[in-house]
Image 1 (tube, rainbow, N blue to C red):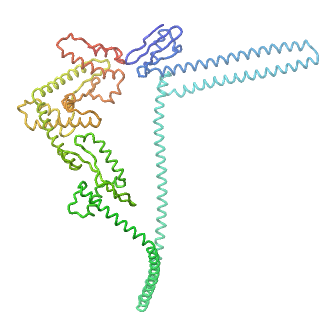
Image 2 (image 1 turned 180 degrees about the horizontal axis):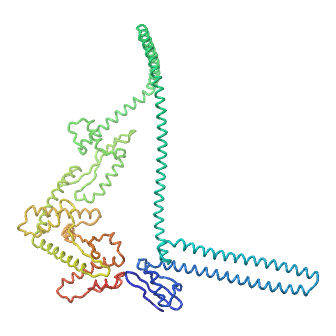
Image 3 (image 1 turned 90 degrees about the horizontal axis):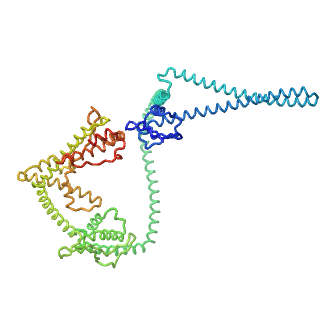
Length: 638
C-alpha cells in the first residue's frame, strides 16, 4: 500500500492511495495538470486510476474533479474507437483470408474441371463455379463497401480536423484542452449576451411594428375626420335649408288668428288627456279599494286577536324591563321615560350579540366566570338568580325571559355587584401600584448607593479593558491569508423615550451619592422601571413565570446594556463590519478563523489578567481546526 500527499492546505487538497492493482485519489482540490505531473513522477498514468473519493464538497476538495472526469471520459472514448477500428481490421483480414481461400478453391475446381471431362460433370462444375463466383462477388462487394465506408470515415475525420484547424486558426489560444475549455466558457458567455441582444432586437422589431400599426390607425382616423368634415358641411347646408322652412312656418303660425286657434286646440287636447287619465285612475283605485275591503273583512277577527296578544306581551315586557331597571345594573333610570331607557339599553348591546340566543349569552358569561373564578375566590364571588323564571313571553322574535342572573361579591363584609366591585378593585389596584412605585423608588435609590453603583461601573470598566485586549490580540495575529479581525463593545440604543442613554446612565452611576438630585434619581428609576416592565410583558406573552427579583436582576445585568460588533480587514484595505453576507463569502478556512480567533483572544485576554504567568493553558483538538492551515493554527496558540 502506497500513500502520497499531492497537496494539502486551504488552497487545495489531494492524496493518492494505491498498490500495484488499485489506484485511488482522495479529493481533487487542485488543477488536473498538477495531479498528472505528480502521478507521472510516481510512474502512474491517469488512465490507470480506478476512482476518486470526495470527503466533502468544498472548493479546496473538488476543484479539479470536473477536468479530470472529462479527460478520463475522452480517453475512454478514444479507447472505444480504437477497439472498433481493431475489430474492423480483424474482420477485414478475415474477409481477405476467405477471399484467398475461395480463389484457391476456384483454381482447384478449374483443375478438376480440366481433369474430369464429361457434359454432366462440366455442367455441375459450371454450376458450382457460378455459385462460388456469386459468393465471391458478394464478399467482394461487402469488402468494397466496408473499405469505402472506412475511407469515408477517414476522409470525414481529416476534413473535420482540417475544418477545425481552419476555423480555429484565427482564435487567440493554443490547441490544448484547457484552452478549448476556456474558449468554450467564453463562447457560452458570448451566446448568452447574443441571446439578450437578440431579444432586444425582437423587442425593437415588435415596437417598430406597433408604431407602424399606430401610424396606419392615425392615417385611417385622419381619413375619417376628412369624411366627417365633408359630411358636416353637407349637414350645415341642410340645416340652413331647414331653418328657412322653420322660419316660414313660424311666420305662418305667428299670425294672430292661427296662434289663437293653435292655443285653443292645444288646451282642448290637454283637457281631454287629463279626463282620460282621471277616469283610468278612478277605475284602478275602485278595484284596489274593493279588494282591500274584502281582505280586511276576512282578516278582522285574526288581527283583533293578534293585537290583544301584542298588548298583553308589551305589558308583560314593560314589567320585566322595569324590574331590570330597578337593579340599576344596566343604567340609572333617573327621570327618563321607559321608551328612552329601552332605546339606550339597546344601544349597549354589541353588534355580534344581537342575533344570539339568551342561553348562548348565559353560557358565554358562565365560561368567563369559570375562567376567572379561581382569582375571585377570596371575594366570595358567585352567580345568583333573580325574579324567577315564571311568566316568560314567547313570540315570533323569540322568548323573553323574566329570569336574570347577576354576579355578587363580598368586599369587607358587604355584598356588592359587578360594576361596583370592578370600581373598588380598580381603585385598590391603583393604590397598590402607587405603593409599588414608591418601593421601586427606594430600590433604585439603593442601586444608586455607593456599593452597587461602584460595582456596576467597575465591572463595565473591566469589561471594556478586556474587550480592548481581545481586539489588540486579534489585530496583531499574523495569518497566511492576510486577514485580521477586531472587536468593539458598543452601548445599545434606548428602546423608548423613558430609557436613558447608557453613557448618561454611567455618568449618574459614577456620581457621589450626596451629589445626586431628585431629577437624577427619578431618571434612573424611570429607566429601570421601563426595563422591568418590558421584560415582564415578554415573559407574560411567552407564558413564563414572572418574579420581581428575577426582573430586577435582569435589568441590572450590565452585559445586556452593550453589544459586540466584529470587524475584518484584508491587508491594507479599510476595516469593514463582519455581517452575515460577508461571513458567507469567506472560504472554509476564513470562516473557521472568524469563529475561533475571538474565542482564543478572549481566553488569552483573561490569562493576561492573572498574576501567575505559569497558569495552565487550554488544550485544543485538531478536529476543531478543520480547514485551517498550520500557520494560522500556530498564530492562534502564540
